[in-house]
Amino acid sequence: MSNTTILGAKAIHGQNPQYLVETVIRNRIYDSTFWKEHCFALTAETLIDKAIELRCIGGVYGNQRPTEYICLLQKLLQIQPEKEILLEYLQAEEFKYLRALAALYIRMTFAGVEVYEILEPLLKDFRKIRMRDMSGYTLTFMDEFVDSLLTEERVCDIILPRLPKRQTLEERGDIGPRKSRLLDALEGKSDGESDRSRSRSRSRIASRSRSRSRSQSASRSKSRSPSDGGSRYVSRSPSRSRSRSGSKSPFRSRSRSISPDRVMDTT
Image (cartoon, rainbow, N blue to C red; front, side, top):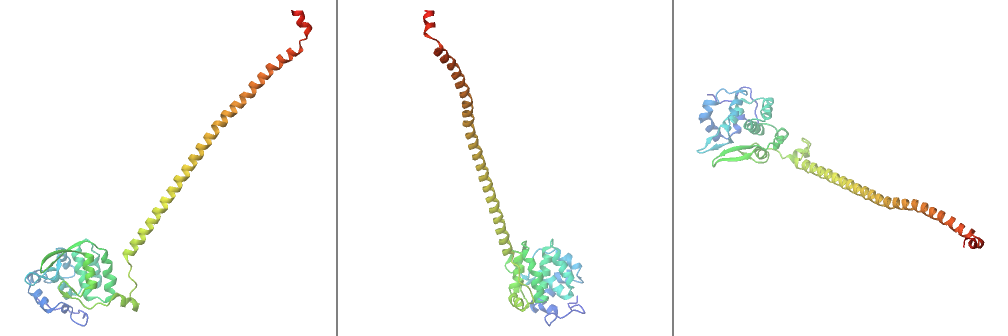
């Protein structure tokens, strides 16, 4: 099997793309069984099937044996697929190891501005991935792996090309400021808390207004009940007083009209 780079490949960082992997690791990849049996005549399309079958990421393990992940990375450096194909690899969310493979390749071959613009959205991916190294298997997360690509100098036993700092690119105006998801979350939380406080204050105001209306209605009902009794009492008392005054007035008038002569006659 020929280990030469595909014809027409562009130099990356001023050298052959395959030389981005150290000579010792590259020679071990060429001597590995997986490279000889499964990486022969792979294309950008057929490589997807091999990447889907991956179960871990990593550089070398055991007795300096290369992982299948690093072998496929070497194959990508050899065939040098187009940018659109690599972006399709990243958009395949259901295949996380294919995404991790494309992320490492983009970090090694793309310019600094494109690396930040393409890989930073992957920090939202919190899925677990397995990593294999000299000590065995360990668990990590996709966002941690991408963060290591953006901040560390060596990942998966490979020395990464130098990446300019993001602050330097922002000062030069090559890239815009990074949007903080934590700040957005805090703003959303504050808005939610303000909405909750507003709803609580509104409910308190409504409950207070209801209690006030109930107390006012109760006071009105109490004030109306004695007035009604008093009005009934007053309405009856004049009639009785009038009737009594009417009954007394004729008796008094009769007693005053009787003369002493008539009294003598009756006796």
